[in-house]
Length: 161
Length: 188
Ligand SMILES: [Zn+2]
Image 1 (cartoon, rainbow over the protein chains, first blue to last red):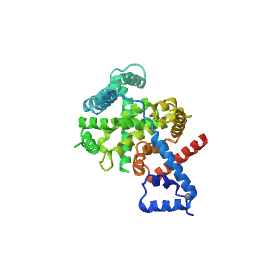
Image 2: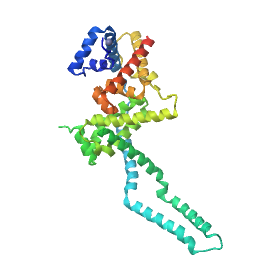
Image 3: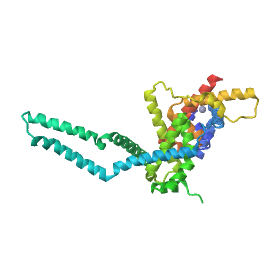
Image 4: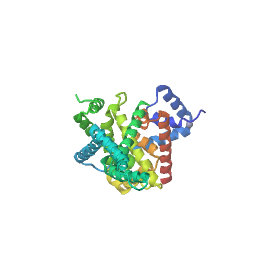
């Protein structure tokens, strides 16, 4: 007797097999009491499962949609902030200005101390300012958006695959 | 004539809010039920099904229209749920979220059949055991069973949702149902 068509039994029961395969499984079932018994038990089990599908707890759909729109707005707002060219351009030039001050500001006021140490102190001071700037504060959001984008890429790739 | 899901999705891709709203109304119940069947937690199901609609809104443009919209969207829902289960497993290695609220509430959710109450009690208990066993299946096996039994999807559609071959879906279903049969035999 040929190999038992175990994984074909569910598609057979659900009428999903093409005629040739269906015929092959039917012939096997005629000859094999084990697979016949399996098929009967599977039929019973699938019937029990579909008769006993439970409903989830009820939902207020108007509230569900209102919540969804709030989430969507929040996401859009965050995204809009990142894609708005003006703040980004401002942020970049501001960072540039701060760095300039950090490096050159120190040189214009020479002191008796070690010049390198003085420069480093100026940079550190101005980096404190830089930290307070919104771009730096929102790096966590960027990270989350990148995660989302990579998820979406995955989805798109999956669709093509 | 009602616009098709696919047509609505293409309109939603062009930021047609009304089309998106219609899709949400059409799919909210199915998305929530599917998420709940995999996660068995109403709050998570609500949250993740809403997240699926946000992904739909943001990536509607990548729906090619070649596949069925429902299959494409179910994949988003199922992926989010399986990801959530993976993350939960990571910090709850003993699987504390498995089969949690299925217990008592299951009996209440069943329609009352017109049969002998003693029979009904025994039957309810069997069904409760059966679905508790479904909850203990590996996540992808469980998803395959839910998609087949509850969403009545064909094997090729389940394969599209789970992004695997039909042969793999057959193996998932075979293993899942064998495990369920074994559990039920032990219970009887
Ligand atoms: Zn056989």
